[in-house]
Image (cartoon, rainbow, N blue to C red):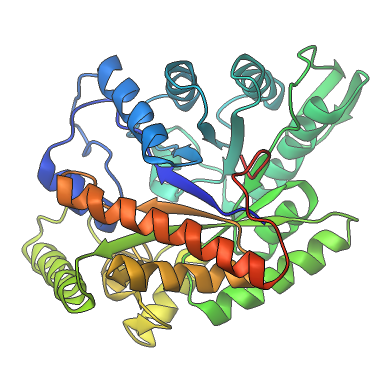
Length: 381
């Protein structure tokens, strides 16, 4: 199976060097509450083209209240590139499901089949900023209806009716002919999230957990999808703290954790720590962090303990970090998003070495298992 390497995020405004270095570990690169930024097309175009030139297979455009509109950002990036694919995150409930299906289908068709959609539930703070106050159980019931309509719109050949608690449609139908099969990904570690993914997802987005918990999740999702006569593929979100040597990287990782700890104590952290994360997946990461800050070959959860489950990172040289990622590839995880600084020439050199080692390692693993690992022609996105 070919490995897919995904870039995390597309800036639409200039990002200062400090933020570009610390953002992946503090939870993101979005504007702070109340901050205004100037959206610059050239910044977005240059970032998309740079990711394509660096050899990434795809880019995730995240959904957040503090970020710009995902559909237009994804469309602009696709228009500026020729090969790379875009996975657009979409929060269930922001649009009617028929309208979201139209937006995705148009994006997919206009780009020649280079678009995917990643459905998310959203965190409580962001949901309230968007005017969403449903409780979690109600949101998941609504998500089931939403995904049913969205999925049938993309896959159905005939107009259809639907009557539910939250949505009703009569004669719904999508006229856009898709140039390639749609790709829907979902995350969610709760029983409700797993049930939705098993029924509707082509790809399941894994949380950044140690190998043993990941192995269990793969088994759970494969069994749940098989009950619907389906198969499912896997994508893992991954942060990295890289340096020329493992020792240097671990010093940097612990320094970042110390800086964040001091900023939290002083009340000036960029993302204040809440009492506990609401997401089941982040709760699992916090539990893993409580059991120890280092897991498997190189997984560091010291920052995650301070960030409510955000920011687990592979720490080490590109050689060590690639080996740690490829342990997950051996389990059957096909795609990995890379969250890492890209602010200096040295950052980029470390990234390029990491990508090269991931590709070479995947080829070697596939050869050992008798599989083919050519450049992907159809993939997770």
